[in-house]
Image (cartoon, rainbow, N blue to C red; front, side):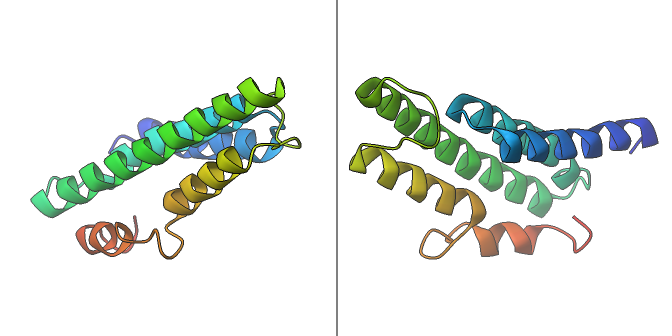
Length: 126
Protein backbone atom coordinates (compact mmCIF):
# COMPACT_ATOMS: atom_id res chain seq x y z
CA UNK A 1 0.00 0.00 0.00
CA UNK A 2 1.19 3.49 -0.80
CA UNK A 3 2.66 5.15 2.33
CA UNK A 4 0.63 8.31 1.75
CA UNK A 5 -2.61 6.37 1.60
CA UNK A 6 -1.63 4.40 4.69
CA UNK A 7 -0.86 7.65 6.54
CA UNK A 8 -4.22 9.10 5.46
CA UNK A 9 -6.10 6.01 6.64
CA UNK A 10 -4.32 6.00 9.99
CA UNK A 11 -5.00 9.72 10.40
CA UNK A 12 -8.67 9.05 9.61
CA UNK A 13 -8.73 6.39 12.33
CA UNK A 14 -7.37 8.94 14.79
CA UNK A 15 -9.81 11.60 13.62
CA UNK A 16 -12.81 9.27 13.89
CA UNK A 17 -11.82 8.10 17.37
CA UNK A 18 -11.23 11.67 18.56
CA UNK A 19 -14.53 12.85 17.08
CA UNK A 20 -16.42 10.02 18.74
CA UNK A 21 -14.86 10.53 22.17
CA UNK A 22 -15.13 14.33 22.11
CA UNK A 23 -18.73 14.55 20.94
CA UNK A 24 -21.70 15.25 23.14
CA UNK A 25 -24.09 14.94 20.21
CA UNK A 26 -25.36 11.62 18.85
CA UNK A 27 -24.96 12.62 15.22
CA UNK A 28 -21.29 13.57 15.69
CA UNK A 29 -20.60 10.31 17.55
CA UNK A 30 -22.21 8.37 14.71
CA UNK A 31 -20.11 10.24 12.14
CA UNK A 32 -16.94 9.44 14.09
CA UNK A 33 -17.84 5.75 14.20
CA UNK A 34 -18.49 5.77 10.46
CA UNK A 35 -15.16 7.49 9.74
CA UNK A 36 -13.48 4.72 11.73
CA UNK A 37 -15.35 2.03 9.82
CA UNK A 38 -14.53 3.52 6.43
CA UNK A 39 -10.87 3.95 7.38
CA UNK A 40 -10.33 0.40 8.64
CA UNK A 41 -12.02 -1.39 5.72
CA UNK A 42 -9.19 -0.78 3.17
CA UNK A 43 -6.65 -1.85 5.79
CA UNK A 44 -8.55 -5.08 6.34
CA UNK A 45 -8.85 -5.85 2.63
CA UNK A 46 -5.32 -4.87 1.62
CA UNK A 47 -4.31 -8.54 1.27
CA UNK A 48 -6.27 -9.76 -1.73
CA UNK A 49 -7.08 -13.14 -0.28
CA UNK A 50 -10.64 -14.52 -0.34
CA UNK A 51 -10.68 -14.95 3.45
CA UNK A 52 -9.63 -11.33 3.98
CA UNK A 53 -12.32 -10.10 1.60
CA UNK A 54 -14.92 -12.27 3.30
CA UNK A 55 -13.85 -10.99 6.73
CA UNK A 56 -14.00 -7.42 5.49
CA UNK A 57 -17.49 -7.94 4.09
CA UNK A 58 -18.73 -9.47 7.35
CA UNK A 59 -17.17 -6.62 9.30
CA UNK A 60 -18.77 -4.01 7.04
CA UNK A 61 -22.24 -5.56 7.20
CA UNK A 62 -22.10 -5.89 10.99
CA UNK A 63 -20.82 -2.35 11.49
CA UNK A 64 -23.39 -0.92 9.06
CA UNK A 65 -26.19 -2.70 10.92
CA UNK A 66 -24.97 -1.38 14.26
CA UNK A 67 -24.58 2.14 12.83
CA UNK A 68 -28.12 2.06 11.46
CA UNK A 69 -29.44 0.95 14.86
CA UNK A 70 -27.51 3.76 16.59
CA UNK A 71 -28.85 6.31 14.14
CA UNK A 72 -32.41 5.02 14.51
CA UNK A 73 -32.18 4.96 18.32
CA UNK A 74 -30.72 8.45 18.49
CA UNK A 75 -33.42 9.78 16.16
CA UNK A 76 -36.06 8.08 18.30
CA UNK A 77 -34.57 9.63 21.43
CA UNK A 78 -34.38 13.06 19.76
CA UNK A 79 -37.99 12.72 18.62
CA UNK A 80 -39.21 11.84 22.11
CA UNK A 81 -37.02 14.20 24.15
CA UNK A 82 -36.47 16.96 21.58
CA UNK A 83 -32.72 16.93 22.22
CA UNK A 84 -29.81 15.26 20.38
CA UNK A 85 -27.43 15.36 23.35
CA UNK A 86 -26.02 12.17 24.84
CA UNK A 87 -26.69 13.23 28.40
CA UNK A 88 -30.46 12.98 28.03
CA UNK A 89 -31.50 9.45 27.05
CA UNK A 90 -35.03 9.52 28.37
CA UNK A 91 -36.66 6.69 26.43
CA UNK A 92 -35.87 3.17 27.70
CA UNK A 93 -36.34 1.65 24.24
CA UNK A 94 -33.87 4.11 22.70
CA UNK A 95 -31.29 3.52 25.42
CA UNK A 96 -31.62 -0.25 25.07
CA UNK A 97 -31.20 0.01 21.30
CA UNK A 98 -28.16 2.27 21.66
CA UNK A 99 -26.46 -0.02 24.17
CA UNK A 100 -27.25 -3.07 22.05
CA UNK A 101 -25.82 -1.40 18.94
CA UNK A 102 -22.68 -0.31 20.78
CA UNK A 103 -22.24 -3.86 22.09
CA UNK A 104 -22.61 -5.12 18.52
CA UNK A 105 -20.05 -2.60 17.27
CA UNK A 106 -17.36 -3.61 19.77
CA UNK A 107 -18.17 -7.32 19.77
CA UNK A 108 -19.28 -7.50 23.40
CA UNK A 109 -20.91 -10.78 24.41
CA UNK A 110 -23.60 -11.87 23.50
CA UNK A 111 -23.22 -9.72 20.36
CA UNK A 112 -19.82 -11.19 19.48
CA UNK A 113 -21.05 -13.69 16.86
CA UNK A 114 -19.20 -11.89 14.06
CA UNK A 115 -15.88 -11.35 15.82
CA UNK A 116 -14.24 -14.83 15.59
CA UNK A 117 -15.07 -15.17 11.90
CA UNK A 118 -13.64 -11.76 11.09
CA UNK A 119 -10.50 -12.32 13.15
CA UNK A 120 -9.85 -15.68 11.47
CA UNK A 121 -9.85 -14.06 8.05
CA UNK A 122 -7.33 -11.33 8.91
CA UNK A 123 -3.64 -11.38 9.66
CA UNK A 124 -2.32 -10.46 13.11
CA UNK A 125 -1.04 -7.02 12.07
CA UNK A 126 -4.48 -5.88 10.96
